[in-house]
Structure formats: structure tokens, C-alpha cells
Image (tube, rainbow, N blue to C red; front, top):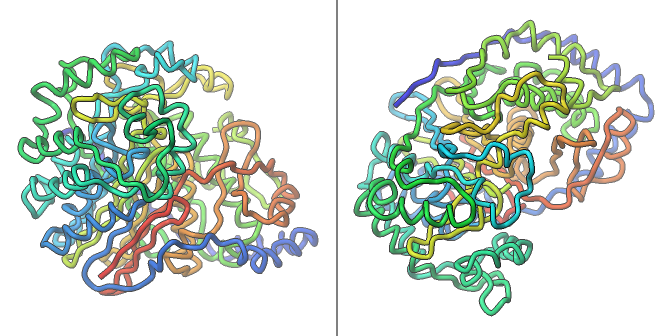
Length: 578
């Protein structure tokens, strides 16, 4: 497999003068200081209640996913002698069955693996690629009509990636990690609260595909939470995958079936190019921060770029005095995140087509200059930074031998391209929607579009599987779902744990903000108190409210031999330790 250059970022810890300056600035603004001082008490009332008590410690195994069936199935693999990689593979396959609005064999993803024996982090990119006949002009006219939805489908990478992970890091036989997912498809699973909500929300759109309609809208009525759903076509395909490995998807009749389904709705997938798909190992991004080694995903992930840039511009000493619940803290993180989003639009694309000098992008001189432009009483719009310089499932697993996996799998938007082949039951992705339209880059005044649609290109992603290591041992593994919200969510949860010593349950449960790419500068969850909105507006933020919380973060923390798992309640996630 191709390998990219290893990227490291080492930066000097800055002194406490900046923290003192920030605190003094807040004190000089009486209205803001009052709001910031009271927000802690106010926000304490607005934490999202976790679905499970995920902070029960265990010394052997831990799993956190967005679905109870997925978590329990993965834990079963660990109990039966599998390692963290085996459990993550089973979880990804089971998620494609029991959480089909988020992921499936017709999609792709990223994985970060920590090898406990060798003390090494490895990342694997099995993201979808654009077909040879991709219609680049169509991306300027989104949303596409239903009859053209196939134009957003890329060559699936899920099974190729999972097979590669199994070969390199797995402990159990391949068939043994596939069979649990096959049984869930054959025997049926209970519709989760999150899946039920997505079925209801997408009920009109689901009607365009007869397979999805039969599965989730029997008699025209959306499936309710607790209903049992069986998927015999998908079970049959999983049986084939168990017996044949990657050949089941990338050889034989299935490439022809997938291409036919895609071309029927305007796509360009061919049966010849599906077998040519290959996952790519990429060296992880690495930043040394506050005594921790943080590993995350390199491009085509822009999420990893955001995380490295943010940590390179922030210190624990300056963040702690602000308080995790203050408007000052949210504003500071939002400013840092907006700069990273601007860099995404300007520089990040498929590294095979649009290489970027990450050393230059992460240079201390560049990021220090940006940091000096950020103050607590002024807001930069996304355009300022750009000119001056969705359906996804995250899985975290850990075993008794020190192996850890942080894996994000996706079909992109809910239920992908709304296209399922009736013979094999595989739901095709709409991942190419992540390509950036040329009109967007022109609007931002950018000279080129690094993430434009091209044959064989992998679109830029927000997926941010992340691992934090201290003194050679993992202390935190996390990642999330939710499109553009992923990187900012991972950043907020990571800082909640490492800076404010929050429990994993609290870190993934409390309120978060997002960075819009349109008129407003920051988006708050609907439960955010008005005091926070007023505080941010005093600082120049243009605040909007998120209509839905279609994002989530999963986390495992390590305290010596103790493992603590937490699942985000926004998507009714599930965490188990033992």
C-alpha cells in the first residue's frame, strides 16, 4: 500500500502570561465577566442526560459505539478471545446492519489503530473514491434531483479496509468476526431510538428506494423504536463476505449489481473499477501537547488538521481560567476552529492529487501569527481567515493487551444515496457530496479548489479518529460522527477531559457548539441558555441555533489498568466495560 510522509508537530509551551492577559481582558469587560462567571451554574442544568452509566470502570475490555446492538456484539467478540481490532471490525459490520442510516458495506471510513505490543499508531484510509466517469459539473447544482442521486456515489472502500485491518492486526479468523453481524441481519435487530427518529425524519426520501421502503416503511408507516427488522439479503451477502473476504464485494457478481443500481439513478460506477479499489495506509498526524502525544488522521481528513492546529495554538494554562462553560472559552475555541475550517477550504484535498506542505501549514510562525490576531472581544468571519492565509458512525474499542482502535465508518448523509441493490442488500454511499463546489471557493475569494471532483479522488473528510498517549500508554481514544461538526466536537471533548478533568460521560454529554460555513459564525445546541448566546454576541459572534443534534462523540479513557467508556446520548449511544 502507498505510504505518505510522516507529519509531526512539536511546539514550545508558552508561558502563563497569555493566560493572565486573557483573564485580565475578561475582567475589563464587566458585562462579559458577569455572564462568564454565572454560566457554569446555568449550564450545569443543561447537560444532556446520558442513556447509560458509562463511567463504570473495567480492567479488560471497553467498547463505545452509537448503537446498543453494535456495542454488545463487539463486546461478545472481545469476550470470545478477539482483540480490539476484531471487535472494531465486528462493530463496523454490525453498524451497517443495525444502524444503516449511518454506515454500511457500501461506504468507507478511517481507522486509527494503537498496537499495544509495539507502541505504535497506524492509520488506514478506506474512504471512497470518485469513479472515472464522475460528473464534476453536477456538483455545482446541488441538491440533485432524486433521479440523479447516484452521481454522488463513490467506489466503496469499507470491506477492503476492514479486511486489511484484520490481516494486519486481527487475532481471530476473518469469518469469526463477520458471523456476528450476519446473525444480526438474519435474526433481526431492534430499531433504536436514533434510527427510528431518522426513519421518521427521512420517511419521504426513503420512498424513492423500494428496498429501504420495505425495510423501514412497511405499509407506509415508519418503523417505531423497538420494532424488529430482519434483512435476509444483507445476511446472505455477509455470509459470502465471511467465506470469501474482500473478493465477495470486489469480484464476482456484486460489482455488476452495485454498478447497475448506481447507474439506474444517474451514477457512473462501473463493474470494472470496483475491483481496483485499494485502501491506503497513511502516517498519522502527531502533535506533542502538554506532555501528551496526540495522534489523529492525516489528509484527506481535514478534521485531523483542525485538531493539530487548535492544540498548537492553545495551552492548558490559558484555557483553565476561562472555565469550560464560559462564553470566553467557547469564543476562543470557535475562533481557532474557524481558522482551521478556512485552511480546509483553501488547502485540503486528496493528497495524491493535491499535496499540501503540512509542515508549512503547522509552522509555529504561521500559527503564532494567527493566534495573536485572536482576542476575546472580536470575531473573525470564516471569510476573514480564508482570505488572510451527517450519517456517520464512530466506534472505539480496547482490549486487555493494550490495543486500541478508533474507527469512523460512514455512508455520508442519512441512508447514503438512498439506493440499495435488492439482491445483495448493500446500501450505496453519497460520499462524493463532500467535494467542494467551485462556486464556494470563488465566494471565499480562493484562487483554486483543492477539493474539487476528479476521477479517482477521495473527497476531503471531517472524520477525526484520535488517540492520546502519555509515557507510551494510551490515556484517551475518541472520535465522532456528524459531518463538519466532527472535528470541533472531538476538540471540545478532548479538552474537556485533558484540561478540565471531566469524566468521559460528562465530556461527551455536555453542550457543544459548531462552526457554520454560511452567514452565522457559531451555532449552539437548542438547550443552550440565553446567557451564553448574549455573551457570545457581545464578543461579536453571529449566533444561530442548531435544529437537530445529528452528531455524537464516543470515548474510552484509561486510568492505569482501568478503562472508562462513554457514549454520546445525542444518538442514544451505548458503552460497555468489563
